[in-house]
Image: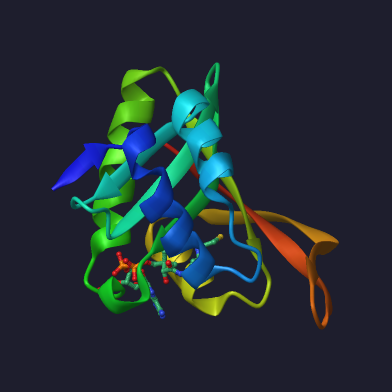
Length: 143
Ligand SMILES: CC(C)(COP(=O)(O)OP(=O)(O)OC[C@H]1O[C@@H](n2cnc3c(N)ncnc32)[C@H](O)[C@@H]1OP(=O)(O)O)[C@@H](O)C(=O)NCCC(=O)NCCS
């Protein structure tokens, strides 16, 4: 079941984020996003989620993560389908995102979801082993 998330989901989102990224977002950071951004997830407790920010006719994926044990069964695709439908209803026509150049699962996911590459930002992400470039992707919604 895909649903809009609320502040009660903050701890679980922080847990999934910590399992998914080198620098996880804290529960307090998640609470802030849950109050000001669009947040959709699957299940209760959530097994995965996306956080988006919409401004006028554009939106950006701030983060998306699925619990490691629940990956590759279509949850991220289902969550994005609902999120994109909501964005279109809000008048958004273009969705952007940034992804680390070495994050091959995520790049494959975005390509499969109809995103097209539009740019590259060198040395964008700081990692323990050094800096990594970000690739920028765009999707025209409702086409
Ligand atoms: C990227 C991520 C969100 C994908 O979530 P998911 O629920 O596993 O993805 P789905 O099952 O919905 O996959 C949909 C399609 O995307 C592609 N895909 C997803 N994961 C893939 C992988 N590891 N390798 C290759 N293709 C992949 C496939 O085309 C897949 O369809 P298929 O399974 O029928 O072949 C998940 O791997 C994740 O949470 N990663 C860690 C966090 C992260 O990197 N987020 C993105 C930051 S920019």
